[in-house]
Image (cartoon, rainbow, N blue to C red):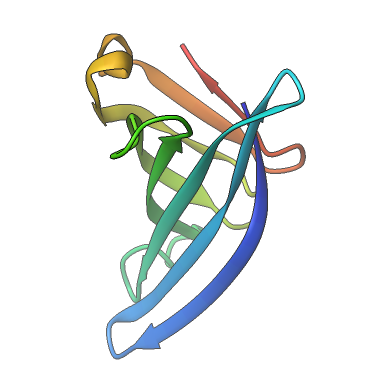
Length: 115
């Protein structure tokens, strides 16, 4: 899957920063879904000891049904590279076989691999 970002908004609060991202998902050059991603930076938690990271939760909403079939990815985001790693934490019925599988997102290409 390839993510194409359409929105990116930072919201600061006393404890850290929220980053909200949204966009579209293509597979084999075909628009198949949209996504929403939330990253959380916690001051003195994810920004120390050389880490420039955040907790990340991304939900992919597949086009075609209402409500949409979905898959949720949870893990860590590295701000230096844009790379992410983690696992599939939840999914609707059609995507349930992916629960527990590892995922990676490559920052340079925005390609997501689940496997």
